[in-house]
Length: 446
Image (cartoon, rainbow, N blue to C red; front, side):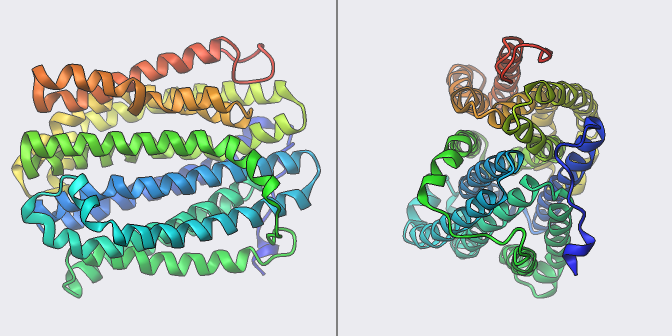
């Protein structure tokens, strides 16, 4: 019955602005729910004190490493399947999905087993404070299990978006994150599970959501088919740069939090972690809209209509910059009241506000870089996408961090991140001006 209610969008719809909104807004709403869930999760855990919040903060970027694999695989599968649909080859799209699910399943099981073996070195690598080791050890197995389930769930979302079913992605994300937020107080406080309750709430919501996806993918038109390994190479060409960029971003965040722990202690870690979550609240929706629109670009390239891809890129850029600037201002103005809601510790609040004073400034720059990177992925330009994706928390960020931490200490952490984001935006602007976001050099300028 679900099939009859879901309307498949025509990726060749000549009304480009309408199509972009119909695809982008549901994806945007989906990642907005993700961002809201992260903040609500932190708010509930923050009521337990600074130490549980510090554990949640330190381990959250580590979960991003596994999510990077899911996003990389999902971006590759969504883009290549959208191109296959654009080339009128739906069977190839089903085989791509089948292979992607096989790879995701193997990765999920193997990674969970490996991470259990590496628990002690991982907690040591993350710089977990001595007083927080006991709750961190108890929380770790549950967290890693949610990471494995999350990898498969991410793939489901991307495959649906790649087929033009952004609304279905939104519904499942709303189910998952809504149920998670509803269960958080029950598990954390009602059942008195503390920090572990946050993980149990996530795990329960994921199981329910994956059950819905299992039913959805049984429909004959989108049922995955066994695909040969030859289909993996095109997926990896598109997805690996995105996975690498997210992995580098995660390592950068881990370095920031480790330095915050060394330079300022538990309160500094918790405060910077809250600031980063609030930044994600405003940047994840922008990323979601760009991801939702990417199938339009990929479909246009697959059909050989590069001018249409350039027009979509230009519309996306204008909207992202305007919305990004507005969200950055809102984040800067709301830093003090929001930090007071999310933490009862005054030191944590002070660190959060200080970090947001810098990080809010770079939101438009993040928006510009996201638009450029989405276009590069859709055009199957992996080297340029990798260069840009590794910039904000990689080859631009680390030199800035090394130069600024010795003289400025803790305050250098958010400043380095903001400067790297702005320089990455300049690089994205250069790529767009040089016409590297489409097969032609016309119509793609900032």
